[in-house]
Amino acid sequence: MNIKKSIMRKLVTIVFFICFQSLMAQEAEIRQSIQTFFDGFHTRDSLKMKSVCYSNMILHSISESTITRKITTEKFSDFAKSIAAISKNTKFEERLLSYSFNVEGSLAHVWTPYEFYVNGKLAHKGVNSFQLLKDNGLWKIIHIADTRKRAN
Image 1: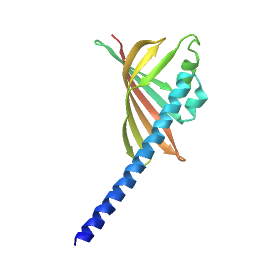
Image 2: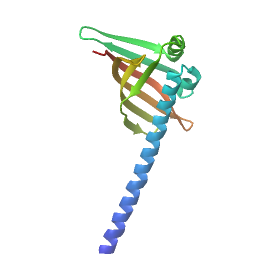
Image 3: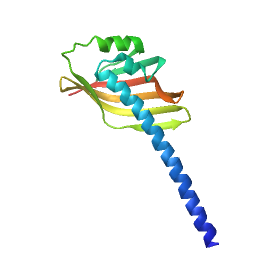
Image 4: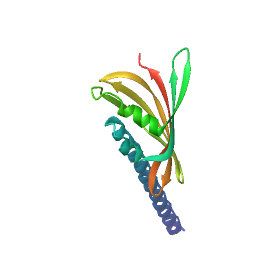
């Protein structure tokens, strides 16, 4: 009887380890797609950003203050044009502070608190909410929603 329990424990441990490894690999792939997006964002490279975005991706931004809340909607093409139009003298960086993953099959949701810096100064902060779809083996961003609160 003890041999059967020992074998079952080992089997359960192996199955758990395999599932954990698979989940970690998926999260690494998803994180890489998000990182590629931001690499393109920071270098104003719309083709790099587009490589990890679904063809009809939509962006929603929620600007919040103590008095008002405003939501804007952009198509990826308009977003890419606005990034390309930023002066080359302006340095900007969005620093992702952490990642929280939810994955089910070919759908993933990633929550990333962030801080946004312009010329080295904190301009605003908030959270990104990414929706991704696994398409032909690559995780592609289908939707981004973010909040924006001015830095104090």
